[in-house]
Length: 311
Picture 1 (cartoon, rainbow, N blue to C red):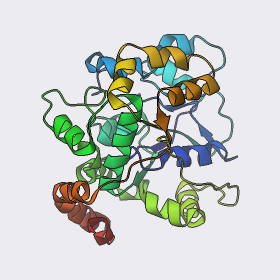
Picture 2: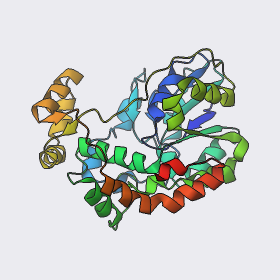
Picture 3: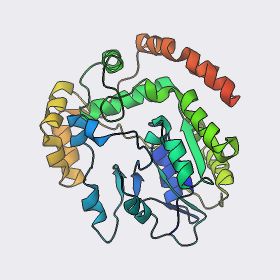
């Protein structure tokens, strides 16, 4: 049985979908049909997930693996080793076999679990300005009905929750506290097996970004395609409270069972539109106070000037 030897571990909302798609089209790579199986995040408990998160997340894992052919799936929580091994059953002579679970960067257990599975695995982390990451995360939460509040209220409510964690709170701030998360991987794997990249480089010079990725993974950097960084926040609800209510009662998930065209038409009927609001100066200043020390620490850790993140 061929093991995975590559893990794109995050950060969430930092361009990982684009990197996954790039490798998924590469002749020397085999990527898991489940983009985010989350198998190694053993400290994430499905039983603690909020009802809203359960309604918007595919959790019928046994049903999925009962099929002889594994169809592409965005995200689930695989817990059985025999199921996880099946993700690479089509592997032949690919140099890279891997997956992309953004929970692995946040998880306190994932780094050691991955090492126990394959100590020679290569780890890639893609970072984004944590302020922009949090705002993009908020827009996604607004879209999926996880919140119906304005940005700052949503941040403050999430921070004040007694029960915090993946699937039971949003972790708007926590997912951007990169230094401790990266340090776990450096300590477990050593810096030579961990590559830290930046979403801003992916946007500004995708050719150079992917060349660096291919060099790290030891795959051909000529076998490539490039496109804009993918976004999952195309439609924003005009009526957030109504949207959250429809998610709560399961109406959106019911409609989603039909074709993507029907689902998009349904969203537009509910008042969804593509006019994404920009972060205000007040909101940006609030987030700067939260992240200033973290950004300074990260800059020292990675020996990269990140002062532009503080502007």
